[in-house]
Figure 1 (cartoon, helix red, strand yellow):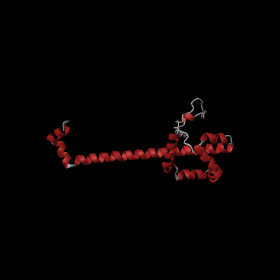
Figure 2 (figure 1 turned 90 degrees about the vertical axis):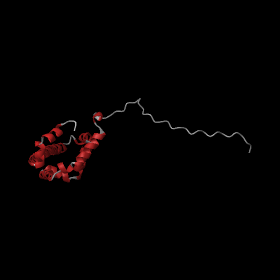
Figure 3 (figure 1 turned 180 degrees about the vertical axis):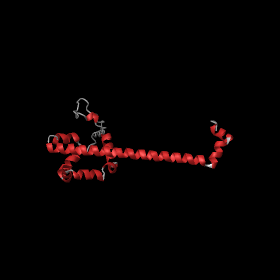
Figure 4 (figure 1 turned 90 degrees about the horizontal axis):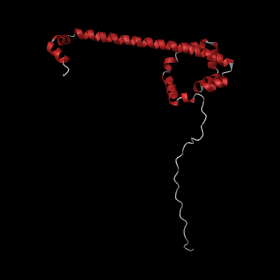
Amino acid sequence: MGGGAKKPKPKPQQQKPKVEDVTHVKAQEKNANLRFDEVQDNMKSQLEKSKDQWCTPDLLEKIMKSPRLSAAFSDPATMKVLQDMGSDPQGTMQKYGNNPEFKELLMEFSALMGGHLEQVGKKEEEEKKKEEEKRQQEIERQKKEMENDPVMKKINTDTQVKALLEDPKV
């Protein structure tokens, strides 16, 4: 029971921050430096947000009119491959790119989508042009309305008011 020397408690060791091992170069995909996850995520997000603009009844009708595309979109296995194509195009092409049926399907779908998106873009441009024309017409209408307004006529013909409006100090 003697009062021998007690062992001192070991001091808690501080955890050292982990440092990345830079002595070994890790292999990356061929185009990894061209891929930015933020951009990819944003693109997916924008596609989802604008889905109503490009995924139209007209597009679905065109798909259904094509026997190959209609069959492909009805087949769960093909739909899985197309979904994989959206998330990992390179991997999907490596896996299925040598399959002639897949190549034909992809070519037909790409051509259909290209033409469809071109039409959607033209329609959007036409709508913007019409909106701009309406805006210009409204501006012109407001100008004419102001020109015929008796108060504005008085302001424009009163030299004192005109001088005050043109004075940069006011």
